Length: 200
Length: 200
Image (cartoon, rainbow over all chains, first blue to last red; front, side):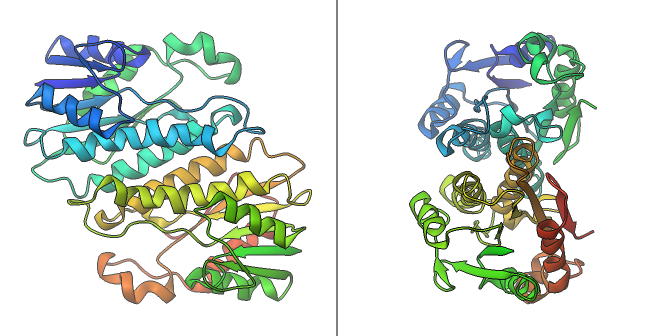
């Protein structure tokens, strides 16, 4: 398969690329590095990504920002970052890619444990993750030509655990290959409309 | 209690007002009717609502639009309606009201069964509902002065079932008093950070 990994240079993206590249042709897309540049917060940039890549069988998104910081003082603009980037950015990849993806292709978006087990600093992530999960389940019912869509909900990733462990007391990090394996199950499996969780 | 019901003239709002008015002072807020006018898609309008109402103990939101129509042709702008109104509009009521609400007060937002059991015409609702559920669970951890927040997730409401039954084959309508009862449990109970579902 020819697979676009958006955010392929990030913490999770790198693990996904490593996992998929052994068996597939992987195109790494990123905001500041990779084979192709893309900013998923811009529809024009996403259109340009697909123009440059040409044909493809799968899109995996491990990109998207959200606000991290105290909720007590959070403003609408801060919370809206997660909506514009992590939520709408991922949706945009599907809306603009669904007519171009190969028959039977797949989209794999990224939710996260914060939806199931939130922390107050990550309200913006919780909003975006919930929106992504709702989108995936609903969109799966209407994608045509056998195109599938799933979300992977990673736990606290091993490679970012040092930065986030203090905000998540008691949370056991998830090894990178477990998250990458969940992505591979989405890409190579038959499931659609599923949230594949890699956390307890 | 002094309770603001936003969208109090709508299908669900009317049932909520009827349920709560027997025991509380209810202020009906709405876009085109009610005691006070408000458009939750505008931060200025929400600020003005709170300015005019003065002190209050609870906010119930039964307002917020989202796009209903075929997903196959849905554009980003159509899906974004649910984000600007049903998702960000409800969040805005909390962000701008949290410093003004009485100690121990409560916010009750509205999710919906479409998040759990989506239909392809309601992708915009699924996104908004998921975002609301993520927000509620995370925000509950950080609201101060004993302020609580919950979401009610109504099933297909009896009073709108005629319009929506054809899109929801086999779905049993939920009586209005059941939805209103869930709101009352949120307002008068002790729970916080909960999604109170009124559907199977």
